[in-house]
Length: 104
Image (tube, rainbow, N blue to C red; front, side, top):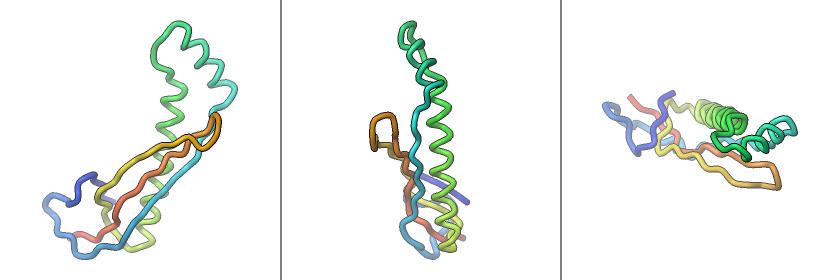
């Protein structure tokens, strides 16, 4: 699956637009990560536990978007975007979305 943030795939011609595709996940923090994050806020620096958690969530969301595109018969996704939002205290949604297309 080709995934690009542009509205075209360089060197390819869009033969058919399959439509909007998306994938999402809601990720919550856990006690172990919170303890480490609390300690890190005292001394400063990257909170690697949250970085890893969000990277995993992004990959899940992208994977679900790709599955949606495959089900529609696409071989590429153009205009791909990632967004995040808080859905409740200590939980965030990551959503990946774009336009599924068939390119040659």
